[in-house]
Length: 431
Image 1 (cartoon, rainbow, N blue to C red):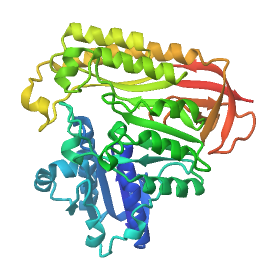
Image 2 (cartoon, one colour; image 1 turned 90 degrees about the vertical axis):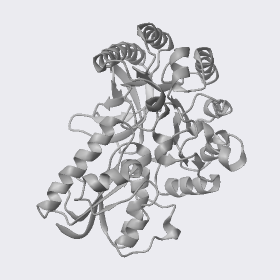
Image 3 (cartoon, rainbow, N blue to C red; image 1 turned 135 degrees about the vertical axis):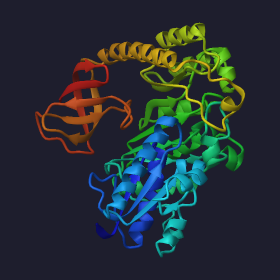
């Protein structure tokens, strides 16, 4: 056990990761040695930043806490703190069920952790953080919370109403990070589309991204988690005309059946969805769309599922993830709809949908063979370098395996000719 060292373990999404990075900067300023997601947890204090989104993520958080609780009983750590979404949502239950945890903090009150450790929270460092990503890219969280209240989603119960970060603050952060060597900014929020509505009553995402693109050193800007209803179409000319705004959009559509979308309370229908996709592809040529789809939501019969399969065949998403519906306590669906689709049916539909998407992904990947692409070099393995194109977000999208014909510098761009395609990887040679 290392005195004056704190281990931070981040679970869940990149939005959680940004919170951990802010906490780490405060702890570092207080004089602590701080490690993030270390392979060897040996600090006297461990902080678990939990996820509470769906059952699997909740279970991962619980298992992590239980394992650390055992380490505490064995004297390997002294203090165990828990923060984040799971703690925000189920704090009372967790306090009763997990007595080995010394303190629980929610999504927004973790500043009290500094006081409990005997230090004051420093407001002058409120906008600073210790990056846990490779030094050439980061995540930029531009808002918190959500006003959409989809039937299946517990996020508003955890994070509250949508709250945008003021634009001057974001632009100052981007300038500071770019001056420190960050080239790639992955812009994240629970709902990108609503950015600015709570500040000035208008959609300000296009202006924010346009102004970010003007900042020296910003090479790539990538957009994650737009909402399809009331989509800010003014962002499309920015994407099309600014060279450092990636032709990439992460927009969760969830389903295509009018019946299922109505049950989900998505406030959009099939035709509006098709019109949105057509406009995205028309106004941003070459755009790669990442989406998330859900199977097994109440009301999805075999006819509605086949409609979703047909939609996936026709839409040919470059990137797609999917998951089976799981009922979340407190949501509209849990209180008003019956989760009556058997789990085995949900899993069968999920497997069929993902098998279809794998074939589509393979066909799209094969079209890149012979092309020369600009690739960001992320890391070096024994036999090759690993990088990404503008269409590949870290952690979730395909990677490019680059031959070691000559030395490449991590965090720099390389021109790579694609020689082979796999469903979720490209292979290429340096030029």
